[in-house]
Image (cartoon, rainbow, N blue to C red):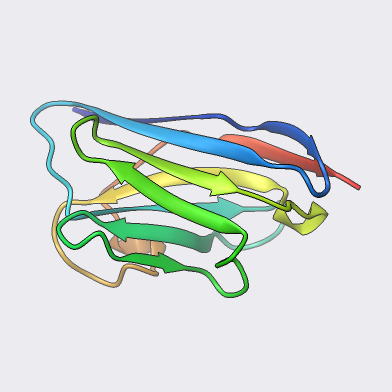
Length: 124
């Protein structure tokens, strides 16, 4: 059983920062890439960022690059999402996800494993 456990969410004022973490654990686990998605009430799950372990390549959702940064620690099987200059529209539940094989890195249905989500609230 593979588990992804997110942490680091919370309440922050607009303009503030948060750092989310996602640790993978369980049986021998080797993902090809890991990503972050978010979902606000009444909206579809949205791609935020992803990292490909073998190349270190990173990808971001529209308008997020420059404010959000994804990094990873392969030794710890952990991925991080640094979020700066947060805006009220960034408020959502943020989910970590992992993909063992290949696929469209931007699409939620590609991913094999998901965390339980962590709430990010941004006050104006």
